[in-house]
Image (tube, rainbow, N blue to C red; front, side):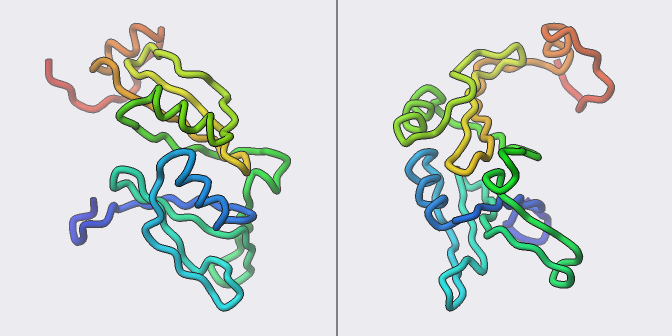
Length: 163
C-alpha cells in the first residue's frame, strides 16, 4: 500500500474487447469481485476495477489515442492473434478448488495444477479473450538460496533473508 492512502502504490489494468461480459465471467470463473463500474452514456466502461482478496486491478476497453494519454494503443489478446505481453499472478487459498471452478466456467487450462520447485502449487489458465492467469498456492516456505539450488539457478539479487 502507498504511504499516503490505503490504496496500493501500483494497480495494473487489463483490456478486453468486450469488458463488461468479461468481468461477469471473471467473477464466475475466478471468484473476482467487481468493486467499481462506471460507464459512459453509450454503456462503455469509463472506469472499472475488480479485486481478489483486496488486491485490485483495473479493467478497460480496448482503445487508442494520439493525445489522451500520449500515443498509445491498448488491445486484448483477442485482437492480437492471441499474443500475450504479460500475465497476472494470483495467490489463492485452495488452488485445486479454484482450478475446478475455473475449468467448470470454461477457462482454457494451459497447465494443470502442479507442484513447482520454488515451493508453490500452480495452474495456468486463459480467460475468454486469451489473457493468461497464473494461480498459485504456497506449499512450503523456501529461501531464495533453496529455490536457486532446486532450480539450478544463480542468485543475482535477492531480498535479505533470516535463517
